[in-house]
Amino acid sequence: MKKIFSIITILLSSLLFSQQVYSLNANGADAPNNSYFKDLNGELNPYIGLWKGNWNGKIVFLELKKQKYFLGINGKGI
Image (cartoon, one colour):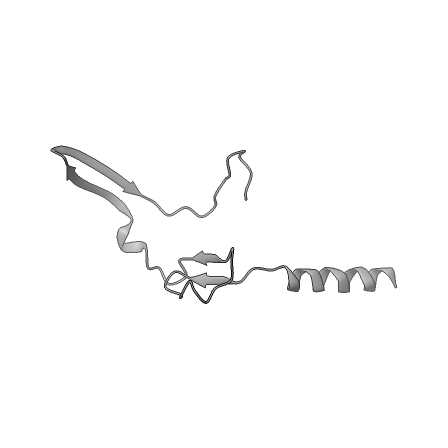
């Protein structure tokens, strides 16, 4: 009986506290606070790479990469 109760509790808590993932082109006004936006459709792929630009007579290089996991300030995930 304890096992069944604990399994039901775990399932209900995972359903209640799970976040829904939204695409980057989703309307942010419809999403609840602290929503998770993710590049689901590969919209950022054209921007990956090394970019070169001129700013106030200086050459600026910018390298953009996709990052799968973010490590917080203390080295642990958020």
